[in-house]
Image 1 (cartoon, rainbow, N blue to C red):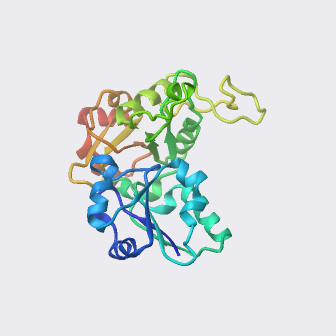
Image 2: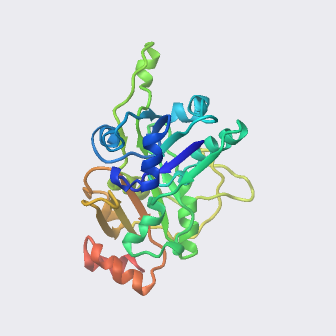
Length: 299
């Protein structure tokens, strides 16, 4: 049996009792470290191993996507567990692993847990008032994707909030070292609320673009058409850090005011607010960076 076991929001003790029992007895246990991490040194591996009373096998992107057969080996005769921070079904990577397992005749069971997609309710925003979820990647000098802003604007036009998942880079190959014939990795990087706000501010400071029926493309190769200017530097946004942990931090402010905030250590998330119900607004007020600017951001 292949088990995909959700670990919850980031504390090693958030694993379910059933998940803990299975992980302790499985033939092999993998810890997926590509889509998220636990709190603590080394991505939470030492704390996880201490809780389980056994070693775990760290699984990076290469392991999940290119060595899935190694994970599935022996799962037809014994139990193999893959531990995932959050909920296992919140990432397409895990869907692919499940499909490969079923193609190989390996039975699969999923043990769900809390994820940021549901935990955003801690802001007071109603979960059913969220639209499409987007991801914000680190920009480089030559790669500055911004097409996700189309979805943010479309959500805003419908009065919906947007949850933005922020980039994490763990065990990314160092291209300079690779060119010299050495396999080395860059230091881990975790996008902050301030970095996400800075990239978003640059995007909203330029004319909005989105997919067009005429197929005209921007220099980035993204189709364009006119879109109402509903996403501005004054749009109300919420920054979140370490949701579900004792030192959780939440700040609400116009987009322009979040570019300099220090939310502390990872992991961070970001929300672009759509129309707020009065109850949502009342709840969000407690997180205001500057309460006097909240009404302005709601216009």
